[in-house]
Image 1 (cartoon, rainbow, N blue to C red):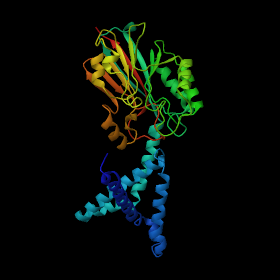
Image 2: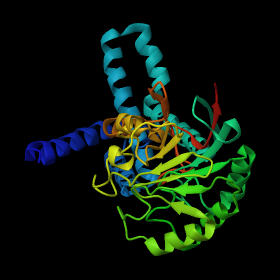
Image 3: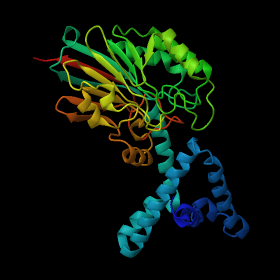
Image 4: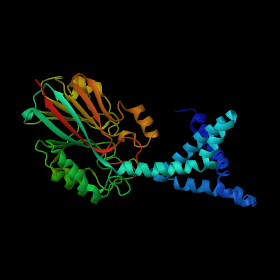
Length: 375
């Protein structure tokens, strides 16, 4: 436990300082100058504006807190620059005052970020990676599609209304193998969303199979009790021909091995080690390692993994908070990382978004990996 001063007192001091900073900046807004002759309005309206910001940001999973966070950040940065320009004086100070627009600029920048972040979240991309291996592959090549972190909700980037677009992008990759690396569903997923996406997975043609590992949200209630249980999920996956892997390794008829790990957070770290999953270690079978969280890469590579596929981070989603939080806990925030000469890890930015239609980091994507056998 942290000292009570750092846990309770210091955050309140910080919040009070931010409130004072916002209040003083709001007093400078041009519309308020029109009521400067009426002190009650002039000094009272900023308080109402601050109360409105507090109200819209009350939900930790709502878009309002993202709006308020960006606005406060821009005001903090702008106030720092203003203090510096006062010391510099002259033309730099005049130029800054014009750019600052008496405190309107943070609102304009926040509005732009909200528009851009929504557009970025809703743009579904196909990210392609090309890999090579000396190990045997069926007909010398293998193409797989990774789906991760859909989090289907009406207020998020992905829900059942976007299934036709998702189906089209997956089909365009012509996958031999479909892998789903966790948080495909979460505690906010309604039964109709669960059924719709399971039906989609059933329609996908993947000759070598479809495999799923659980994330930290699929069956775990961080924020509320889910509307479905394990039996519902397993039934939907079985009907779709998707195999759930939990600390399990399976070898396909073509010789490729799929290893699916239990999620670290979902199990509180109580799962098989990499060495327990593959006690024989490195061999001549190409091994695809599925682990929702991007962690334990080196041990996976040492156990025999050739390709590690993860999600969880959403590529940060909201910069810089997401990036800082994920980098502190995981070995990779987004993209490809070479673990050894023969093992690569790929972290998806997510096929959806968490909580809201907003993203300033990472991509909303499906991942298509093509592996070719070389002599």
